[in-house]
Amino acid sequence: ETHKYSGIVEDCCCDYETADHLNKEVLHPSLQELVKTPFFRYFKVKLWCDCPFWPDDGMCRLRDCSVCECPDSEFPESFKKPYHGLPVDDLVCQEGKPEAAVDRTLDNKAFRGWTEIDNPWTNDDETDNAEMTYVNLQLNPERYTGYTGPSARRIWDAVYAENCPKYPSEELCAEERILYKLISGLHSSISVHIASDYLLDETTQTWGPNLSLLSDRVLRYPDRVRNLYFTYLFVLRAVTKAADYLEHAEYDTGNPTEDLKTQSLVRQLLYNPNLQAACPVPFDEAKLWKGQRGPELKQKIQKQFRNISALMDCVGCEKCRLWGKLQVLGLGTALKILFSVDGQQNAVQTLHLQRNEVIALMNLLNRLSESVKFVNEMGSSTEMLTEGQ
Ligand code: FAD
View 1 (tube, rainbow, N blue to C red):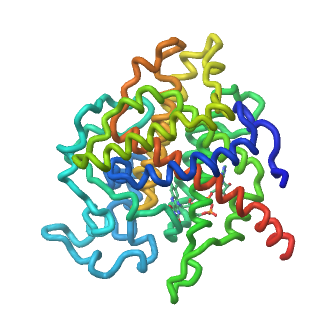
View 2 (cartoon, rainbow, N blue to C red):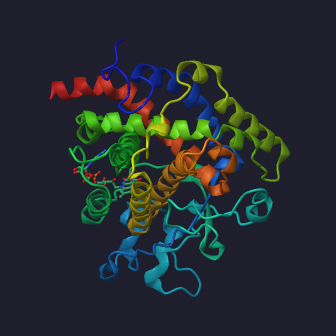
């Protein structure tokens, strides 16, 4: 079967067929295993929304701001009961619901050997422990939540309009186009997850794929599909570039059997001979920031990306905010790995990653990998569906 998208993924070093094949045979199965391990399934995050942009909006302070914007069915009654000492209006924005399954005992077990240096590409200060909580990502899958309307729209508009110039545009240099494509690829992936796990029938609580939504939001726009593949390869490149670091990192969660398994899964992923043979350098970052404007441009894009990261605090549905923050941190980590030290050969040797950055990076890659797989598998059946209408 020939791939609908053929040739090299724009700005990458790998073609669509290879990307699909590698994903299906090698990366997707390893990543699915990896994200289930104790090390990778707990994400440390400040879930309280603290939106710096629309202060008079009230969205973040009100009942409607958060989980309550997701369908009621997602959260059993008991979770909505008042917590001790909190004003009623604040309830639903609080962490601590059983879904968010917080295991605070992990903190002293799991933080050895990891840097706490802040990431210049992101807005969150990960050292701000008091406000952070642990979320079990396995219990909070990214899927349809019902978050929609002006609040969601405003975030995406701000992400595109305020932070990255519209593409395609003649004046955009390669670097700015890449930022746009990363965001658009992430947006595609979020839409794919909404479409792949959709609430088809509220009364019977039936969940399943919604192929017309997949087609309407993603497949109908070839650019959105291309950007998804681009983002996938970009993040994959970051992971393989950081291979030495990731291989020797500390995956200690206090359970030696599980931790050994984690380490071996990481190795399996990083040093897979098929990956190295078929697509050793999925994206070539050495081409960027070359010109005279390089350093200035990098600063500008770093600031734009930090703003995008800050916007995630304004996402009005808690679960969407969780995955928005995780994936933007993952992209920020990929940017940090690929561009951490200006043009120096030994950039990777000076690389230091936070534990949370590595968790975000691998979970992001897994999400993108799921999206690429779903788009590849559903692409043709959805075309039939659209033609039949
Ligand atoms: P939207 O997806 O809101 O898109 C808005 C506009 O952006 C489109 O009209 C189009 O012009 C443009 N656009 C769309 N896709 C792309 C693309 N790939 N590249 C470039 N431009 C594009 N909802 C959930 O149900 N579950 C979630 O987990 C979830 N997570 C979210 C996370 C974040 C950070 C945000 C901001 C929103 C999230 N949402 C989630 C909401 C969801 O993304 C949509 O906003 C919502 O479903 C409404 O969709 P829409 O059809 O209006 O288009």
